[in-house]
Figure 1: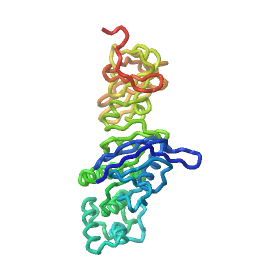
Figure 2: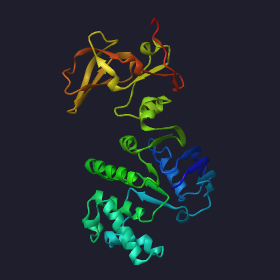
Figure 3: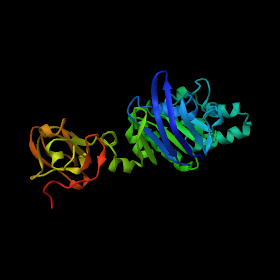
Figure 4: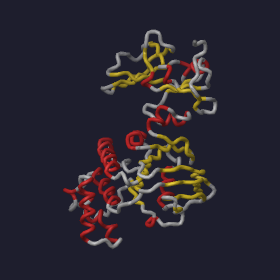
Length: 343
């Protein structure tokens, strides 16, 4: 288990600064997830922690020991990549034990560690198979098992599920969550562009944009109390609805945000709109309504079950006021303000 501290970490490639002064603490035993749009620097930051890229300035410390000049093999880390990186001519057992063999572990120790990891990841029946005889999810579990047998202080995951189909992503995500619970003495850092993975796996999430940390918090903190328009729009699916114009002026702010589940179609709603699209997902439905100049795109209303509202219908929509988010002209979150004229 290790506590990590990043102090003013920067990384430049030539004249281009990719990581622009990151400061954060990752707690011992924590599952931290880095999220952000493509090109925000999340994978680069992971590689700086791993020692696969050289830090331009700043420090990375494991348990108060600065590791800037330590090679990856001396940092006590194990990394899982999206590409699996398995040896095709080796069996599952051989792939999982190869690193231990290079480290000089005895045959018996290798056997015990691999069998323990295989049981944990439900790979025991496949130890004699070659990678080509496995499904994508099984191959990714082999890659994870190869990391487990090394007993690392820190696990680093770089978008490990991005090559899997939707069903396998869910299955493997559950396996990673179970792994975290069973290895609560190991710090885990996970990079993904998929916010569902972030919300379901993380103890805390770090949202990155353009090489800068925009907000760090638990999944619920980021969902319920985003500190900016960017975080509010990035966390949550569907994304938060944003309105300016009269709905914002009535609340003395530049922009308001409201999530789909906090909007209701009612007879005396605050806004009038025409339904332009409807998505029925079974347990709930998403209704898209054009309310005119108050929104640059249709706002989304979530309804339980099957929506009865047809495309082209004119409806009235109201927000739950306690769940309306307020943002200033710079896109920063500000405290809730009363409606003009409210008691």
